[in-house]
Length: 491
Image (cartoon, rainbow, N blue to C red; front, side, top):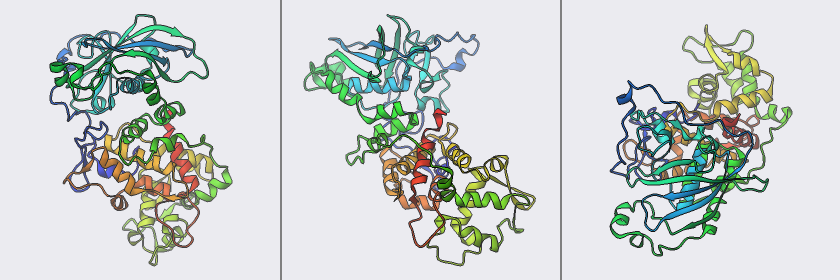
């Protein structure tokens, strides 16, 4: 579930009026509307669409079972139709997903991950009979009816097994840079083996958006030194935090976001800060109980006969007063806090318990426990796990919703004891190419006025309100919760 940003997307990452956000055409990859490549006006050779071949029996998958052991593959990657030949020799851990291999190839050839891509087995990326492994944007595109498996679900050792096995890759459907990966050797894996390393190669590679110039003038027309290639430069790129985060099991979409944001002139080092986080350690029950007090209070209050509601569906004034004393975001609130419709932090918190967290439900004029709520009542550790699972970005929401939520969680994870940097998150999204549907830029303060459940949940993981505080302060336990949510896809 994408908590907190459903208000900003139209279901496919395209946005809608008023609070809508649309993907931009900045060429950064992650900010585009799902399934489009705005910098490429021409696709590669047309591959017949799936529905045109609906009468044919589907071919058996060419994938093979993954290896039981982890080895290192020595792979030669050749950029096709280049003269003189442009190639790289890579050592890749056999259990890498194709999503990671894609990023390795981007670094190996000096590209910027600004366009769409895909892998293919049993032929080229545009061959009718090839088995396709698609990038997230092709998977999310409702207009793409080509059959294929999401690349993040496929391991390298499922498509390369024996020496001379080949895998095809294409980057940028307009420029159509085609690479053939050929397995040369299977090597032993050592504990100190990197996830990916470059061991050799030849010639510089043509940069992004240079196909036309390259075809007319050759490599010298697009790079200063055509013969320049240094494996050490590639390995420096492969040693960046992106690969550390991969090994640590962070959400794969977050890895791409951190990588894309590293190209910002004012990069704040999101990837480096995430990579420097200690291993996840969930606090003990006593500490959790203090920080999850508002959640536990509501679960206790809803037990037995539930929390009674007025005819208009609001909690009664006496209950609102009691709840306000528990909810951290009520710190410094000016007002009587006895009417839920006039006390936004209470109303937003109650709604998050119902809609996103699924701990309470409205039934017969009262707020009552759901099965999930009953299961975690009085159990701080179980409640923590439930919150992490509900905050974890899912696959059913639009691309923007997933990316916005990931950035909220990522910045929360690295901000214990500090305010959530909403302005920075908005700037990150703007860099990705997102804007409101009327063309206006995203602003940090706007997140406070929408259904920002992720922020509501994290900001209320703290002790009861005492004195004034910023409404988006992230407690150490809230930061740990955000960290846990980013790892949920591995559990």
